[in-house]
Image 1 (cartoon, helix red, strand yellow):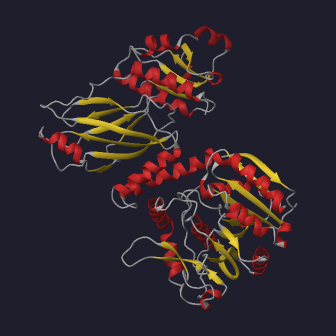
Image 2 (cartoon, one colour):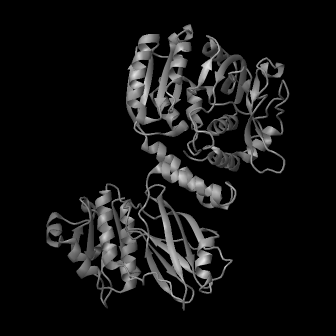
Image 3 (spheres, rainbow, N blue to C red):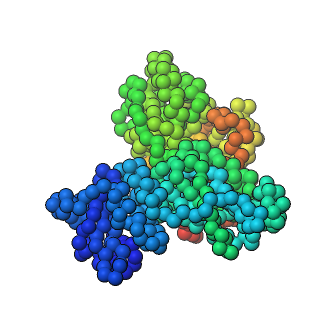
Amino acid sequence: MSKTTTGARTRSNRRGSAAEPRRAAKLAADIAILVREGGSNGEAPVVEVGQVDGLGLSPRQWQEVEGDLKALVREELAPHDAETREAVLEQLAAATALEGSSALELSASLYGIREVLRERLPRCAVKEEHPAGLAVEEVLAVDDDSFWINGWMHDQDGLGKVTVVSPEGARVDLTATAFRYERPDVVQFYSGLGGEATRKHGFTAHVTLPAPSRLSSGWIAELRTSDGLELEIDCPAVSREALAVRSTILGELGQRGSVGGPLAADHGREALTRLQRRVVGEAAVDSVDVYGEPPRDPAVSIVVPLYKRLDFIEHQLLQFSRDPDFASMELVYVLDSSEQTDDLAKQARELFGLYRLPFRIVNLTSGAGFAGANKLGIEVAEGSRLLLLNSDVIPDRPGWIGAMSAFYDATDEIGALGPKLLYEDDTLQHAGMYFHRTPGAEVWENAHCFKGLHRSFPAANVARPMPAVTAACMMVDRDLYEEVGGLPLHYVQGDYEDSELCLRFSEAGRENWYLPEVELYHLEGQSYVPGVRRIPSEYNMWLHTSIWGERIEELMAEFDPNSPVAAPIDLANEKETTLESS
């Protein structure tokens, strides 16, 4: 898109660019505003916004009409009535979506114009004869286009209309969509002024603007009551740090009803999905350090995300270096805690000198999360078969990856392949995954077959198809992995991505297999502080069920997790499931 053309009044649109240009000025280095002649009978001028070379002016015409932006606004736009000025502001706010715009410069220009043209309302002040109030306590940037807004409002009958206005002039009505909740502090404050004590004063909303907003200050909010009172307030500066925003939203989901309640369904899901996309999108490969000479055309590419616990890499390299199969394997570590780049480089040099096993380290510009780190590591990896591996998984003996490859080659229509994973005391951590729903519950959770029993438990030593296997150690064909979209990016902090991936394989007509002959130890979750994953895990469980609940019902109707040999999973009766885009 190079230009927007809408008249300040609807009837002016018909004149379009045929009218004579009167005045133009630059909003940013490559974006300009052009005012053309209006019609007779006092019609408002036609306003166009677009790239300088897309406004249809010859160099001579541009030289004739170009002038100062402040003068253009003051003399051409400000004299019009409030309705016309509001229409102009609505049009100008959309300019931030123009391709090639100088983002911050353009936003700053639009903010200046908004302050000149907007109709100011009285400032919010509590009056005993007409108690009404409005506060916006947080504006959180989910991305440049959408925002999470918290606040409260009070009026006589609860029918007031709340509108937020971006610095660039985009307006969004919160009244119909916001999640409302009780605010005892507001009730107490207004109780002495005759306020109703039972109404829900608090509001939270995830709103999407018609065009991006990139300024952190300059937001305002307006309240219009049913009896005609109008007032406005300034909003606090926008918080933009993605992980802090995510933490705040997750905290609110846990505080205001069930994690999977209306707030999550109507606002949290879209906001967190966008945030996850943003976190991954902002992360990129900063550098790739190569130690030794990795094999050309590797049989398998092993991709291992590293987060915080750098000590795990030595335990893995010690065991891998003793395994002859690794001569044909590519080992790719992805550092997902970018602040540790220098520490890992020093450690990697020492470890390569000690164990002489070739490997790569993919250094990221910022944290991408479990699925994002795997995504970026796979883009660097060269093998046609992938092994997704956690950094805290240690093989019990050599030959494990060769055995997995041989089984994968010999099994028709295989999707993902997972081995037996053990705790340090030789009890079972993973012997395949299924889905469990406690009586009366609405959500399905991931469960591990025979978890906690000894590794020699007979039923856990039968290779069989499973609804899912864990990505702590998962082998998959690269083409198949990419065909189904890989690990989804919409889950928070590394949870339920693997089971959704397996469900995608199932939808594609493949079977996921558990292979007990291969045994590895899994230290499980030691990169995270205990307790911090409760709310993210509950949210992921709810999201997973929201997307895949019907398919899971079908699979679990045919699968007995306690049987040593499961009944075959029926893949013929497939039901279309809408996959979240990642």
